[in-house]
Image (cartoon, rainbow, N blue to C red; front, side, top):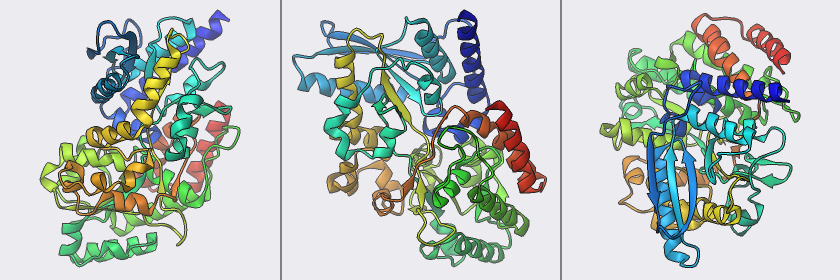
Length: 462
């Protein structure tokens, strides 16, 4: 038993070390909105050192400990704690928020769960890591009862993704709806109307026109060799998933072949370039966007914050629109990334911790702050139609973009697909990010044979 425990912990440490150390894997697996803030120096041994510690609330309040891997999340929770204490004079809370580097925090929590001591009362878990904590007997407190009062307002898929056997273990942070970002200044300059683009064929035709009009200076987009967002979108459009009901890998999908074949042709025709750095959510990717080398790309709505943080000079340039599809009528989006927040069974105040967590992340007040502070597309859909929020001209996100993000979000609200996140996802992402995408796009390798070889390797690992 002890040897098995050690093997599990070592496997987990190796997994998170790969995630933290390999930028290409981060986006492929999960939500770069969180992972991009992570520390790259995963500690494989020794005591994890926190990056920031903050205690909020009256000293005589019930004390709780919370861990996260993004300091901005702590700021959000601290604001919600102040609101909670104002509303609940009989349930005063005092919470110490500790921010650890990404890999360190997940390793530390896994250790605490396996040894049965040392876990915080509340903890953020990045979505790509969540399946690791669902193995065996789950060490988190079910949140069903505290979620129920908000359930009808929350996007169901975002609760489902943090659940097991009918028990909801994680409170979601955002939807992560994938949309298309279009550089309207470039497209207008070369006579292209992005609003007429419906299918990927339309998109390719616009790319050809852009290539000719710009003399090949501007590409319609960039394709990723270090991220699988495009593939997630394709799978959602065809209603496919690269793991089956049992969680076994199945990557030889029509949707994936269609997307890779299409992108390979774009490269051959000079419509697209390969993303510098492997994908757009990298320093090289931001520079490529800022230099005006590409006119569009698909990314989740959390990428809005990247524009404000890294490309402020491009205000009034970018529009947000639904993604093109292979066939008209297919769903035009997929949810990518996220953070599920849990309550540990080791907490001596599980019910109170769960009640606060639900208030912070699921209530209208909480989601209003998630939008204002973090710029995420909220899971509570009542925000989407509240014009005091969606028409707020003072909001930094609304004022940055040419189009209103909520208009697109409401347009695609019933078309946001879900791809399961299971224990094989890290291995699948590794196959695509380290081998398949590079071989197909950099070296022109034959797609079906690349997928077949990877499928064989994954089946052995499974």
